[in-house]
Amino acid sequence: MDTPSLFEATTELNRRPKCSDWSSKVQLLCERFWKACEDGTATADVLEPVIALLNDRDTMMLVQLVIPELRGTPTEPLNSPYKAAILRATESIRAQIVRVESTTQADYDSALYRAEKDIYYEAEMHRVKLLLHHNNAFSAAEERALHLLMALNMALVPAVSHAALPIDSHLYGGDFRSRASKKQEG
Image 1 (tube, rainbow, N blue to C red):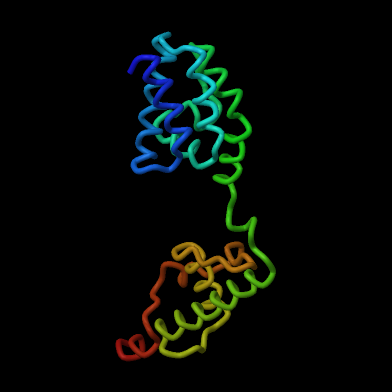
Image 2: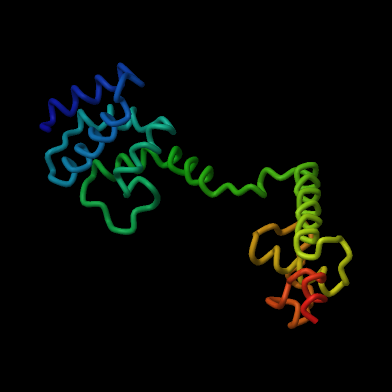
């Protein structure tokens, strides 16, 4: 695509946001402009409309799928002043996207949500006890073994970490058959 058609396509996409197949047009246009920057055929008149297009968070996330240099800080030096100008102009929007991507669930946990997770964890512990032994009676060592087993294998870690609890070696990875089946065999 030559420079005049790049300019026309960019201004058309800026004028008609979110038209049919807009996402694929934006990706294709930005990919072609990026290649034109590499070839040295891009001109300054196309730069401003492209930057205007990329100053939207959703558009930037869409374009980052096809232009890896826009995903983070480029590791290699850029070979085009236009690429450097785009990176400088979109630095704040790219930083916002990185912050959103690095957000974890713990950032949103409230006291009520953690309490609900603990309740679900205790309910899951009760269900496991019933499935394994057909009753809720467990010794302290078996209780620690189940906490460790659930923390390691099912990723159900409660607010209080049970991973540091000592465990008897014969219980961890040992025989978790029900007590009734053990009595029948023994």
